[in-house]
Image 1 (cartoon, rainbow, N blue to C red):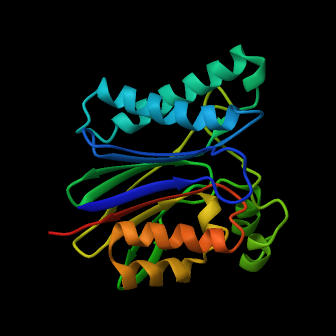
Image 2 (cartoon, rainbow, N blue to C red; image 1 turned 120 degrees about the vertical axis):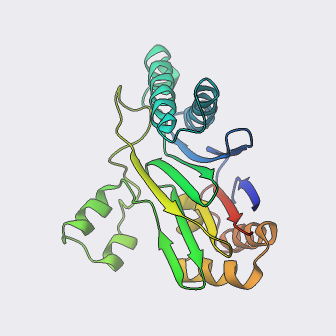
Length: 236
């Protein structure tokens, strides 16, 4: 596989609360978008990703079930830090992790960072947003357009580290040669539509060029948030 990842501060924020990383030993990609008070979001996202990876290293990385143990350890670390430090109270983070095992990719996810599968057949969002507006949309109280333009569209219903226990979504998807895995923070998908992401991926095809082009486009449209993106190209 070929991959590229980058996080950009954007045009409006004073600090970058996103964190992206690839841990080669375990084949895990992570994207996290922190939240909280002064510096707390930046600390939460980085702490969660690093604790997640550290816990994976202590277990058998060949077993997808180790993702749940690693997630629980990361959640406990962020929650404990928030409870112990007044400056960190209320901090938390989204987290989407993808573990590649041949043509199988195992995901664990909480929050509104996203993972997509893109190929010639189309674009498929693999994760669901843990937001209030998504729950209203799922129940039929909001249309898709109303959800996309709702003033509280980023109000999370679930995040890592905000409670002692957090139940993530866990899923598996098959990727074959020609498929792309795209992971991003809301700073990207808020400003670049799914159809544009699909076109960009299939037209450009080179991971680094895709990421750089997408981040540049989001910044040209305001760059109101931090912008983070991971692209993985699967090939024989």
